[in-house]
Amino acid sequence: MTGSPSLPALPCGTPHDWVDRFLLAGPDDQECLRFGAPVDRAALRALVAEQAARLTAAGLARGGTAALRLAPSLGYAAALLACWQLGAQAVLLDHRLTDHEVALAVERLAPQVLVESAHGPAAAMRGFAETDPVPVARPDGRPAATGHALVQLSSGSTGPAKVIARTAADLLRELDCYARLAAFPKAGERVVLLSSVVHVLGLVGGLLNSLHARVPLTVPARMTTAGILAAVAEDDRPTTVIGVPFHAELLAGAAAPPPLPQLRRMIVAGELVRPGLPAAFTARYGVPLGTMYGMTERGVIATDLDGTLHPEAVPVHGTELREDGGELHLAMAASPYPGTTDPGRWSDGWLHTRDAGRVDPATGRVTVLGRRDSQVSVGGLKVDLNEVEHTLASLPGVREAVVVFADGAIEAYLAAEAHPTTEDAGATDRAGADQAGAVRAALTRELAAYKRPRQLTFLPALPRTATGKLVRDAAALRAAAP
Image (tube, rainbow, N blue to C red):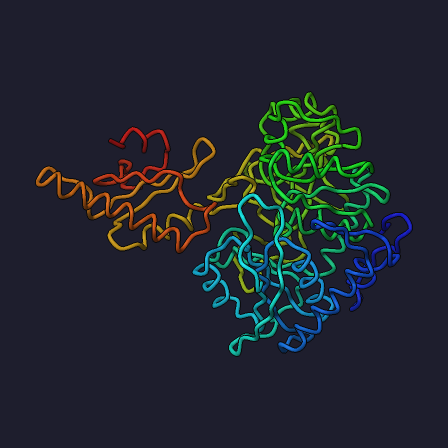
């Protein structure tokens, strides 16, 4: 494999010191990260060493497991790299999950150490937080059962297929793919990262790739239009912005953005881009809106970084895709789902992506048409509608529930015990209001804010098809509502 310019080539195997060699190496005074203030490589190495000492004191060792529940921050980056430096398996928990969701995940994954911040949660619209990672040993934790370096939860904390694991070798393979993309940021340039470093695009395409390619990474103080534009404008070096389509929509709608001669392009991934967005973004800033297709299971799969092929994309180096019944299948030697043998997700060396799409037999380019299952994207964050539906249906007084995604938002339709009847409309109206309040309060405790339905509609009974199945068409459900 060919590595980044001036960097050692990535190996076929994975050395035990891969973090030091491929992520932390470099001149001491070279700027690498900026969470408010610039951090050079010497300072980052010192922070990682400090976190490694804390983790070791908490009992973490090679082959151990640590779950990180930390907001995007310098402390998060240092704690994650320290876990890997110690040879441990890192489990990433989104800091926006509720205590209930975290408890379910920790019970299921049984990490030996749980790392949380001594500080409170980050304020809304903050790009990063001040964190002081505090590792706490868990007596009932278990060491890693596999050799994976990274474990992520794709969309919630339920369902065995939602647990996704990747090896250090696979992370290095993905970094090599980025190094081969001529239009991806290179040494001498910089990145403004809008995607969360807890999820695959921000983690590998942003944080890890910037460290490997020696491209300084900046996370804006505020994830507002003004905050993002200010982060781009504060440095004269050629700049690439990496985010999700929601961020591109935000920037494309800016009334009068300042001149940004350093802006090279924006790259988005995580969900489909509406047809008019690339042209609108280019008209506003004079640079391309590139797109990438990827998955938590694999990382980057295909790209259109110049925005000239949309909606097509070119598979990255070493990637093999095929169509099977309208679904995209991706060649993978091993299943990314530890402990499961679901042939509907991975079989015979092929990952079933659950994405509808087509592959052009002449060019090999791929066109992604959308999800074939219940996973949707809300502001770039993945939500499993089944998880939301099951949570609603388990609440006291709720007989059944259907959750749909329409007009860019989650809607829930419920049949509940307290729905008004003609016998005592006043009393049951009050009971119905109380029921709605109780449901919303329970959802606040049990689901992260981005997973909660924007609309709750209570019906005497949910509509069903002629065969007795619940109707899941948003228009039909809306028509059945009062």
